[in-house]
Structure formats: C-alpha cells, structure tokens
Amino acid sequence: MKPIRASLPFALAAAALFVAGGIAQQSQPEPDYAHMNQQEKRQRNMELFTPEQSAHMQRNSAIDRQQWMKDHPARQSTGMIALTDLGKGTYKGEQGGLYPGGVNTPPPAHLAAGETLARKIVPRDAEGRPSKSGKIVLISIGMSNTTMKFQVFQKIAAEDKALNPSLAIVDGAQGAQTGWVTSHPDMPFWGVLDSRLKSAGVTRNQVQAAWILQADPGPYRPFPVAAKDLEQNLVDTLHIMHDRFPNLKIAYLSSRTYGGYALTWLNPEPFAYESGFTVKWLIADQIAGKPELNCDPAKGAVRAPWLAWGPYLWADGVKPNKDGLSYAVDDYVAEDRTHPSDSGRMKVATRLLAFLKTDSTARPWFTKSGRE
Image (cartoon, rainbow, N blue to C red; front, side, top):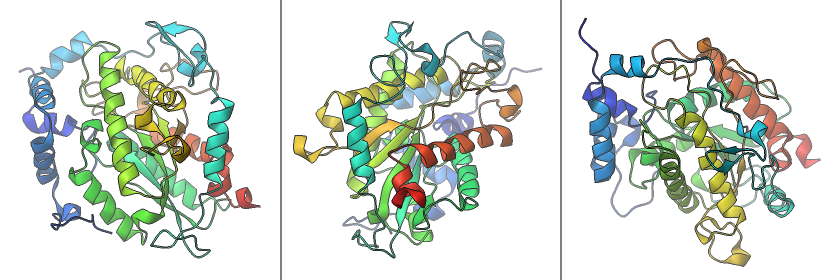
C-alpha cells in the first residue's frame, strides 16, 4: 500500500484545524463572504498569510500521514496533569492553575471588575442603545471544533427555560478558521460572522459577550514557542473584536480538549494540553496590566474586553480530572480522532451551559434570575 501523503487541499483545510463549514463598514463593498465556497475562502486566507505561515503550511503538506501515525501512536492517557489539578506544581517550568499563583479562581480585583461589567450587559437596540426590547448577543469565535461544540450548546440552551429571554446566541466559529485567520481583520471569517449576525436579526452593536476556543494548525515547535505564537494570535483577534463590536464587554476563553487519540498532526498532544498555558498567559497579562489587553478606560485606551476562563476542557484521556471529566476514544470521530463526536460535543456544550448559568460574571445577563 502506498503511504498516504497530505494533499495540498488537506493541508489547506488544516489551516484551520478542522474543516466544518450587518455588512462590514468599509469605503469599498466587501465580497459576499456568506456565499463564498470553501476553496475561495481558503484562497483568500492564503493570500493574507505571512511568509512564515505559508512555509508552515508547505511543511504540513509534505507530511506522510502513515509515517506520522507510526511515530505518534494514539494513547489513552499521557501522564500530563490538567491545569486545574496541577495547582502550584509545574509543567516544563510553568506553574499550573488557571490563574496566577497556581489557583483556579481569578484575583478578587479582577473578578470584581468582571462582575461590574456583567451588570452593564443589558438588552440593546440595533444602534447599541439600552432598550428593554433589545438583545444581548453572545457569539463564539474559533475553528471547526468550536463551531461543532457551540452548535450543540445553542440547541440545549434554546431548550433551557431559565435563560434570559433577551439573549441571542450566534455561532461565529467556522471550519478552517484558526488563530492565524481570526488574527487578521481582512479575512473572510469576519464577513461571514457579519452575515450570521444579520441572519439572526441582530447587529454588531448588540454583541456584548463571547466564548473563544482557538488553535493553530499543525503546531510542531517545542514549548513554549507554539503556545506563545497562539497567544499573539489571540491578542490580535481580541483587538479586532474590540474594534468590530463596540459594546463587547466580556470574553471567556477555553483551551483544547484531549488530543492523544489524534490520527493527524492538526493539533495532537502535547500541543492540545499546552494551549491551556496560552489562555492562562493571556489572562494573566491582562491582570498584570499589559496595555495591549487593557479593558479599563480609567487606565488608558481600551484594547480588549475583560478576559476570564470559561470552562477548562482538557482531561488526560480516560483518566478523570478531579471534577470527573475524561475522554474516551469515541468522543472523537473515527476519521481523525481530533474533531469531536456527538458525545464529545455534548461534554463541552453541557459544561459551557453550566458555567454560564453559575459564574458570577455571566449569570446576571445569561439567566432570568440573574436580573432579579
């Protein structure tokens, strides 16, 4: 049997980890991104990639998949410890926990800032003015794994009678749209998101909260380099979100789920696990007062929404975390063991819903009772 090599279309699909599949205000009309086919979007993305990203994609296109699978056999667990369980312990010199100090809760001052902003999330009309008949829009940002999970979240949220009736949930995540893509303001991703908002009967001005789960395609450089690259892509993505959504106040971030069953190089271990440090560093930089992530107008120009962890989603395969989360091989589709199956999507969707219904920075605007 001939070895299977990654074709260029497959590698371009990997340009976003994971293929799944009103209008921007500019002086020149934008293309009709909503009706672009996948190949047209990929071509546009490739035109905007940096030389380094293009070289990375060429490297991915030359990988022998059969040999890669021999060199990276699937594992039921890795021995790595979830950040939530690692605490003050370390991984390659980096302390665990979701927040600085090896803890899983935000510092009191940061939490208080988020709670203050949460109370300012109110129904708004199409122009962004507070209105009892308006909407509170929650969006997702990310690649195909994100949209696959968020679509299930949308379904179960629609059946939950405890949620705020002013809430509108719009899936902005898209297949083949990784951190490389969302970090650039001219990518079709943003035009597609505009069209989805329009289809939902809402506007950019009504977007006030977001859930972000993002990754880069085919990482291979050792820790912390690939994780730091993703962090910069997220910083750039947050700047674009701030500019496009003037009332965006809060963004929750999650990192990848277990990648030890992967049959491709799209985002295997240890990179899936290490993306948790990407999110931790990003939030820690905002807590530390980095100006490029400032969310407080009293401290200078605002560049980003308030940031915090959403649900932490990684577990060491079949070994449960302390909160009981684990992943079996069938939580991922058989084709690549990277994209989530129905059970894998539901695990994430239910955790995201439970988080938003109970977190003190989400409950005030996400649920009916939060306003009482």
